[in-house]
Image (cartoon, rainbow, N blue to C red; front, side, top):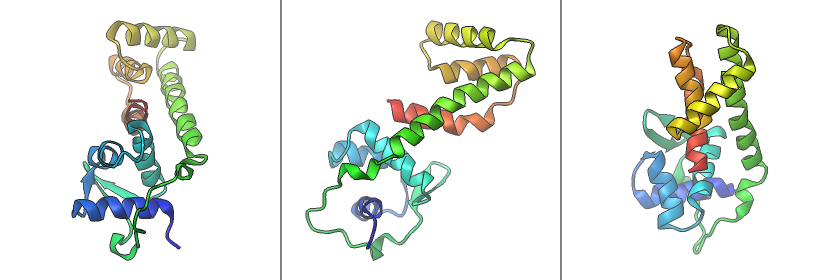
Amino acid sequence: MDSEKEIILSFLFKRSGKESLKFSDLYLALSMDLNWFTPADAKTFVNMALDEKLLTKKGDLIKPSFDVYKIDVPIGFYPSKLVFEGKKEKLSKKNEDVLNKIVKQIVEETDLSEQQVTEKINLIAKEKNITEEVAALLICKEHDIKFYDFIEDIEEKIFMSS
């Protein structure tokens, strides 16, 4: 029995006629074209499929890690909300942790206290109208702290919240 996530992904890739798609092509098809999910839920679904290795990412392109043509999509198929069980909370928790990790790294590599770093992040975020995570990256840049390990998690958070 094929999983519901595999059926959804098979439908998307068969429908597109392409072997790989951009992240935006996937979530926009799920939300705007098919109206199966809200844009935020569609982004969450694509991120979950990436986390569960149902999709693989190479550069800007994403492709399934399984043969979509071996999956039968039932006529009149419509996904249930059960595809999200337990996963939204897990992704949300992961995204909360990234800011804490960045703050900890800034504290370790500068003479700033955690409170000073947090206040500076909040000030920059408010002044520039950006997320706290991006503000934290600006502080890293200011102090020549390597932050590349955090980029993917921050991108994921930004995709999920918009």
